[in-house]
Image (cartoon, rainbow, N blue to C red; front, side, top):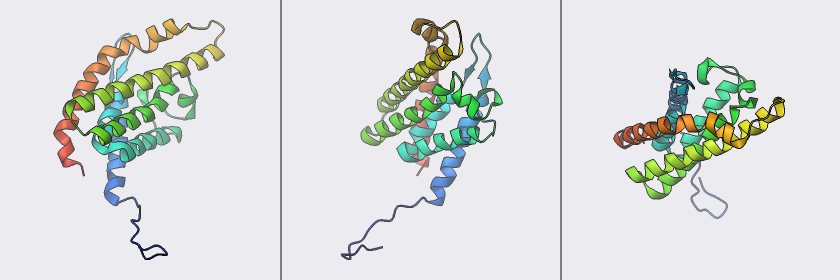
Length: 189
């Protein structure tokens, strides 16, 4: 395709391969959200799915896969943790963590796009992405919970409930995600 001056212009279009990858990794994130380790606070593999998705697909396709995952949940397909679905999940007190997955995917994709797929880059980007997800989700939880309950929670209580129990497990998920991404990246085009 050429512009008015006769210069070649690269047409941006989504390739079939990109659509397939986005769909597969949106489904992978859904499956990861259904896998739950029943502890005092149930642990799911959602963050691992998001980290692997962004680590393998990059910024654009990884973020689109996470958006597709979230949109599927909004329209009623039970892709969220506990086989939940609907806009109410996102508007609830923990919905900010799901929205935070978008930021996780962006951070992981941008870091690996800028600095390559070295193990330390993958690990650092995933830790930072999850930290931003924690930040966004915790602020969201604090606002929604305190607006809907007569007995408000303090920041330290929210952190103790929504972040602290998950840190160790998320470190393990980052290690697994880094290993998976470093082994599979050569197969993803």
